[in-house]
Length: 216
Length: 216
DNA sequence: GGGAATATTCCC
DNA sequence: GGGAATATTCCC
Image 1 (tube, rainbow over the protein chains, first blue to last red):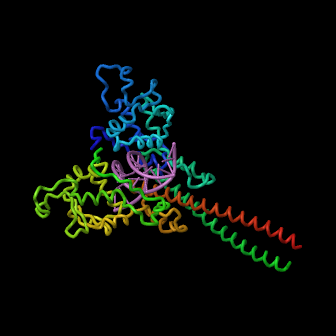
Image 2 (tube, helix red, strand yellow):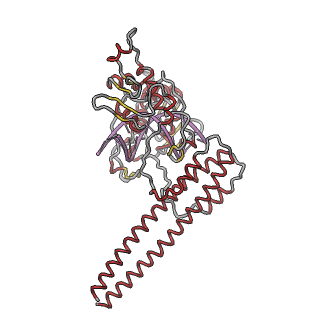
Image 3 (cartoon, each protein chain N blue to C red):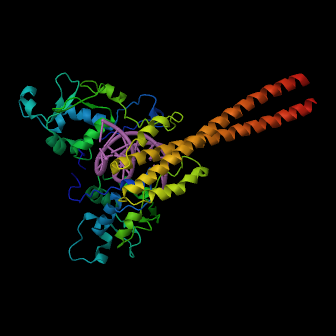
């Protein structure tokens, strides 16, 4: 494989950490993409520096690096980055796919003149912050905010730690079933109300037409 | 790149071909995975045959091939297939990922003794049928039939003993949350419909009163 | 086998 | 930039 020289880690997010596609508690491990990108910067893009030259002397030769204070990173040479660096860490050599991932994780391009990217939680020497970076979700909430009533409970139930004991699971389970019953009852009410409304509407229409006919 | 020797085609499905995740008209181009797998079979797994030997003589050496009548195909040597063939056509060398794709596209493993797979529309000499093969979709309709889960599933979930395996609890839990989301979406629909109905009704009443007033 | 998360591609 | 389809991985 192209990236056989790169350590592949099994860094999955625990089941309870991402529930229904929404990460509610911080996972222990950063996303593979973030770790690879961080490592790539530590390793100078996976390409050796010129022997004996200091960082400053090498600056113009760098493919990719942190900025001076380590709060952003810069892809100095997109072509070499794509051809040499990307395939060492990822399963492709497309700069645009790399950019797509950066966007997915909320990085911002902060310069129109060069390929410089920034994320608050992605900084030199702060590997521990990587696990706080999450993928952007399609935030088009499927149901409107007035249904958020249960979201507090969501937070509560989902904050249970992964290795919590069975008792908590059973409790959460019980609550979910109770909630399901309530939702089903709400739906039953809606159905009844819809029926009444439609009935009323049709009566009203009939009535109205009779009245108009009589008045004419 | 690992597969730089393989022709990559831009075969996207047109917008109208897949509407809301549901394929409505047959796309012009087969899925990349299907085309690659078909080509891989035509090309003997991308590995050269022994010179001068007939197909029959080579049979025991084949990595992958169609069966005798070309209605199924067989991976004769999963190890060589993974190491040599897969990376030539795909971005990985994992046999299980290949299997996962076969399942996604509806192939069936038809032998317990060897890695033989079948799909009605995947046959030797029938490249034109490939475009009729589609990915399986998650068929969980977003709006389930009303309250269908109330009795049977209640009974089922409640029959699970309290001290059952944690895995089952987690699974049940996941299902309950999924169900909750579906119910919440149903309620959102109802609310929207109610709003429309009320709006319509009030317009109708206004209209009616004006009309009656004028006639009087 | 298949659900679901992440990765890659394609397109607007 | 980001939506959405397909691909790959991971897990049950």
